[in-house]
Image 1 (cartoon, rainbow, N blue to C red):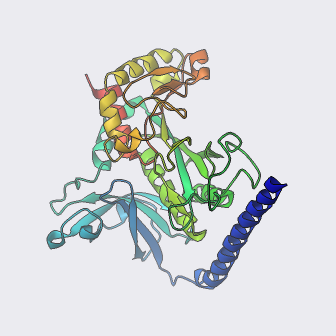
Image 2 (cartoon, rainbow, N blue to C red; image 1 turned 135 degrees about the vertical axis):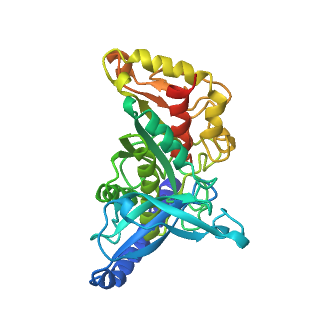
Image 3 (cartoon, rainbow, N blue to C red; image 1 turned 60 degrees about the vertical axis):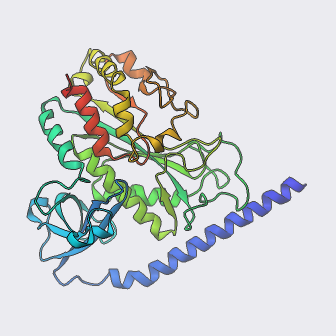
Length: 382
């Protein structure tokens, strides 16, 4: 009887929470819609975004255009106050941003755009926080090998205070992991409206989102971007993260990319990276996959240092050898082994060609750094 009463109270609390969110969304939408329906007077909006000094947050601001633009080379460079983003000092604060990729804006719509940018210093050289420039140079060098990437972005939803997982009991914890992965039902799934909105917004923007699913920990989700060739995987993953956080704003929810957001017996969050070259995808390509894995085994420490913005410290909380992870201190590989550093999917081993999965990158990893390190190890290092 007591459990039934507690269950009803919990359901009532969750229902009130969802009702309040829905009312907030409807109110905000009704207020904003008349303004968003206004004619733009022959002008267009371009939202320039860049990675700040933390290496894991996006900043952005809007510029008015006099005509629609679909090619980044047609956009002017701009600048921002780097002293407010951890990228310069106040006495020399200007940091320049150069447009590199354009996506349709799913929030403003029409011919308004999102613009992924690189940061540059006053000497017109890539800013120290600009990891895209060097990554792109490596991608160009090995473009003839047609590298494909697919990245699996895991994340966790938190209430607006950013400290309590969205939908979790106010006091205590939800039931143990097990029923939440790919689940359905209000007792198992939290935040599906955000997930669906994000998915549709990515499709509208032109992000090659491949799918999505609820993850093992409640309020934790995953979506996949790719396959994409070369530098586009990195641009698209960053833009998809911005879209996710922007969608969550509408629901008064905070998105966390922390690789171990809740300590204890809960799964962490990664950004598993699937990798292949044209040779690997052709019959007999398993040989090249095995050669790449062997090279990776000799560069484990270098990879770990590049696979999260803190040089490995964030990932150390996640890569414990438990909760479907390998130990951060030891390289391992195996067919269909989700407890290994590198997993070769079962169907790839059976078919003798395809791709392999690096399970070490953390959820807050910079994809420019990850793919840079992968390409160097796999194709450029002696």
